[in-house]
Amino acid sequence: MKQNSNFICKNCSYKVRISKSYAIVNRNHCPKCLFSIHLDKEVAGDRQSSCWGLMKPIGLTFKKTKPNKYNKKTGELMLVQKCLKCNKISLNRLASDDCYQELKKTFFNIKKISKQDRLKLNKHQIKLLDKKDFQEFRKQILGEP
Image 1 (spheres, rainbow, N blue to C red):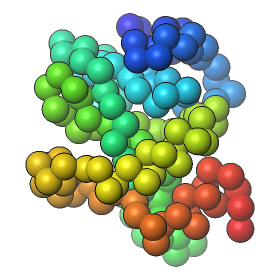
Image 2 (image 1 turned 180 degrees about the vertical axis):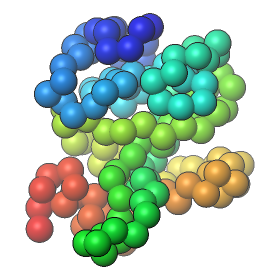
Image 3 (image 1 turned 30 degrees about the vertical axis):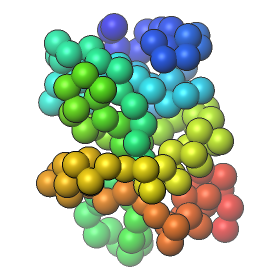
Image 4 (image 1 turned 135 degrees about the vertical axis):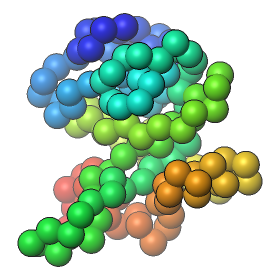
């Protein structure tokens, strides 16, 4: 799959259309089910992976941010995915057309994360969102105060 091309989701068969209006540059996840294909090896958009396994959404996290002049404590919401073939954990930016119900389901998936996956997330310093982050989740997704 090349960058920014339409594709059919390998998980749910949804026809994903790429558009600059969805606020995402290197899209490879489905807005309907949030699954993607393991395409990137090192950095988002490099499309250098030879794995091509199915990437399952396992949670949400905040992008790590440097302190800024606005004292914002949380970064942009990121989708955490795990490759079902090679077990690589990766982060994906969300897009404006991502299904809210799937995002919410993924948000509450934290209870189903295996001990092994929790250890892997800790190793990569990825902290999944939990109940206390729900207000910020809704604020970023729905624009609620």
